[in-house]
Image (cartoon, rainbow, N blue to C red; front, side, top):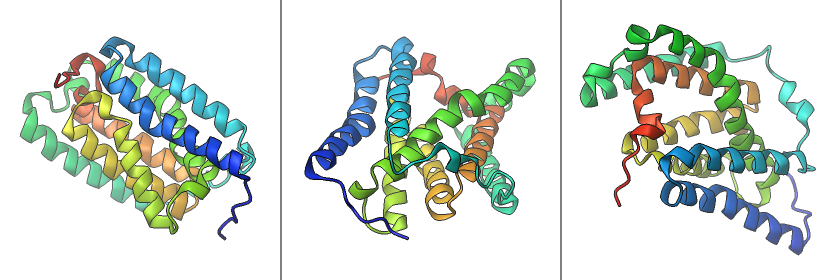
Length: 222
């Protein structure tokens, strides 16, 4: 059921500013102003701000995030995992074939650590900011209809990865954002969004595509 906009003009204006600052200005600043070694500090600050705003969002309840963990759509999860693997292998074979399965071959311990920590340290904060915060706090700013809102969400999720200055990262995160946004906004499952994002990221690192998501490899075009 669609919610009816009841916010006053001052609150709507404040949320427009928040939305623009968090999802547009912050990615631009991290991509153009911060040196690569400090990008993750900027990302941490932006994420912390997003989580604070989410906590203050009256349309959101932390208890809602606990629903659906025992009802994850495993068929969709399997299809997504297979598609990510197929596309990932094609990309790495085309661009950096020598990196295929690099971590699995050369640093299996690090790969295991990534598989354990990535969902908690990276995926969960990203999903809280880009799904509940985006769709709940800023619902009255979004296009009408579920799919237009999901497409905007995916575009801004991809834009947040501009700091890597890689067309591969931009394209992969856009399509990933479509899937994660679909899981949350259309399927109504935060648990599914987190599961898909976690598996997608682990597959990407296992295949060797993590080199495109490493700040030490960032090469700005200016």
